[in-house]
Length: 395
Image (tube, rainbow, N blue to C red):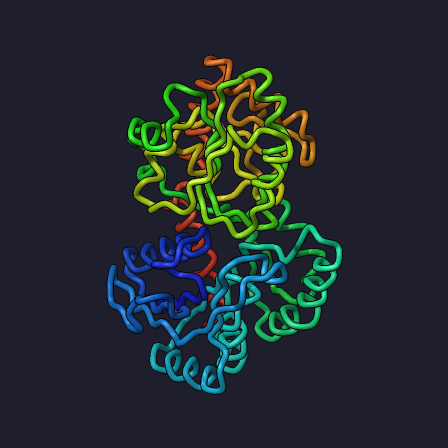
């Protein structure tokens, strides 16, 4: 197959959808398929790049100002008068059998949706982020954007949607009903091998952690992943484990958790590292006692990678977070109800103070990842879906 992969986010830009779209694109190429990647220009990355069996084209882009409406995140857009013509030329030359889009609210997604409708090319769309915001006024704006901009473009290409968890399933059925041709339940994939074998000694020395129990929290800090619940749980955690430290790793776009920590008098236990290189993450995982990453009340890539590394994960999520994949509190993960600060504190304390529980949860979580969430398994599921879509187009 000739597969066009479309995502405004793509390495060297960091982020969950960026790395997943790259991993899938590389996997498609390794399986013998022709791959063209369309993405937005980012920093000094080359405009055209050939590597790993892929051809990557980075289109000129501009950066959306960082505001709360933009979820305080650096978002690049490629919109300009020549965009549709440039996309049409690139895709006509490539002649895709299928288009795999990542992210429903990007202009490259919309531009390729128009192309797909005109050329009758099947589209698979992976929705990584829900357009939501904790502020009621912003939430209304996002719901309006979904209704007035995102859904109309989806109606044009009628993509099949990749559903990664139960929260996304509910969101899709609420916001986009009638705008898609089908749903495929495929969890986010991770590479278990790269997160294993880290050495935490350097991380502990660098941040002055000594032998202290460490709550690691990996991922950019934005309103939907604000770490506020985690900070609210710290007073109870520190009462039971006075020397515990919260180590937050990621770009801070939304610093409210730091202000709240100071107000609660627990800021002495909070260390914010800012962004770190991907190659360093295994060492941070090796330094962790537990990991706790709020994903807007769900389980994202960072948590799955921590599980793959054998670190017990504490997360506010439902046991049915991944349809058909069982999460068992106290067995392969430490769950608390979304919004229940007391329960989160209790689960953190259990992971920090009970070595038997931590060991069991870490080992079982690692097994769960190996069974259901490896990139190879996720790649196979994507190729099954894309193959079915291309075959249906031929008929």
